[in-house]
Image (cartoon, rainbow, N blue to C red; front, top):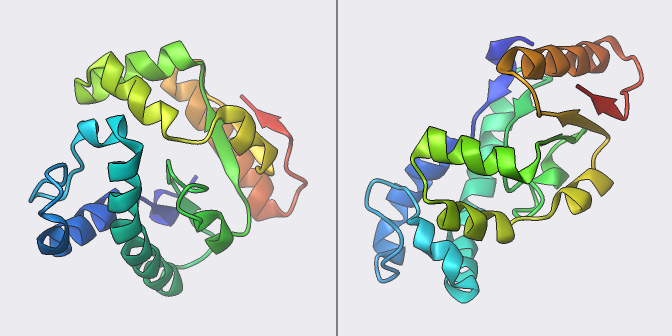
Length: 169
């Protein structure tokens, strides 16, 4: 997969959160550096309020970024469906992993408390919901090399015009 075609929305989202900080500063779960405090996921009402402020601005910026980037691109977005960004893309490929692995990986990557990771996961669509809306699924239950091999195979099928397989990996 060509890394130049990979769009990571995290810097965009953090920049927007910083820009909008004054408007959401009354919500103590938005940090001035643009990160969202994981405690936000413990209260669905607070989460929805924060998302109602951030998601429209993020969506507009993503649209602008997509307009200037060469296509096809890979858009990695954990809240693709929740934010309505599936409407911005032509093909949805969902990456899944067993829950226990996701918990372990988040703890290693972010130093996150398992309870906070579970709360964040509970606020997201389930794998079954996401898979039902996807054109393909990459199973991420092995090594990083296996994940990249599956992603490369999916990318190759996509850019060659070959039919996407239901499952990669």
